[in-house]
Length: 429
Image (tube, rainbow, N blue to C red; front, side, top):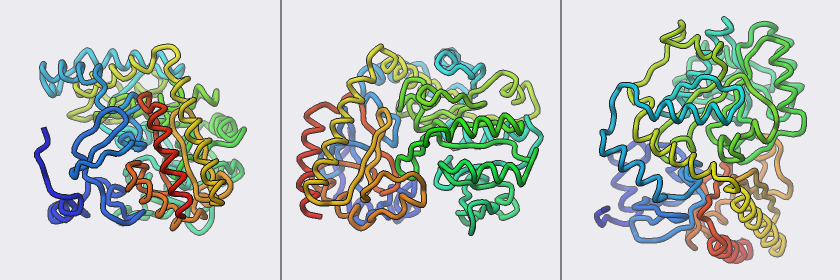
């Protein structure tokens, strides 16, 4: 039970006295949209309630995990049962094996799994493993793709697409960043040029196979296939970061959608059902380079936490029911079509698209294909739209460069309400 607190502004003022920026993850501070963050008191189904008692249709979904909605009865039952047996063991538990078995059964290349406590840990550990397995130092990533806050990955392009990466965060040494090469999403030529310039030196290519951290950007036809071919020819590992897309765009993730099989995959979000979790999966020959079988060290006190495993197993059980995705995808499709129609009727330059149960909206007439393109949208108009929708009770991610998420408990009533408010919002823009 959450005790009554102050207003959102009062709570934000209070938080800023003890938390850096008043938040524990930067985007929550609303700097990208302005205004006061909503301090959430509780969640259920498709809704969030803030400390003032305001209710919101939630399209944030805790940034992706809540594919069956908040506080699903089965997930809560399994979590309560697991909690009753202990919160953490620091020792093996059977649920780790069960969840790993489920992941292996859904992804053809995954023969071994290592759990972590976050997506950041999973991506960071996958890089270390790729370097240890190949004996190479350099890694290749894409501008606009986000893989967590590991130093090697907090790098974006320098003055040119083919330049060595420059740190995009203070505290990242340039000497470390120089080992990170940065290419352009959907530009296979930029990737090939880097391979040509550094033959036999690139340990891995890491990519969000459908980018969700520069809003939703889909791979163009042949792009992922081209990455697979380049990596295979050079002896580099292809790593899919499916922390966001895994189980979201389809039960088998982007690998099912695209037909492209990577060498390793980073998982997170949905596999924890809302609890902190991450995982790396891949062939035994690669994964068994990791301790205790190999020389690549990786460990975590709370990895495989029984509460997280219970929530993840329950969530995968629910989404594995035949036919789970079809109605969810269809309702999201109706929302996307309705948003386009509302914007067109109001004469607002706008575009939108979906991939499975995630989607993107853009204040620009055409769907963007790259980080550079998405950054040309009308950000000020997005801010106005965002706050008009928030005030009306619709919670989209507080940033113009973030995808949004749909769940199985977003029904026709939630879609209708959102479209009704969007028609008003677009007219006001």
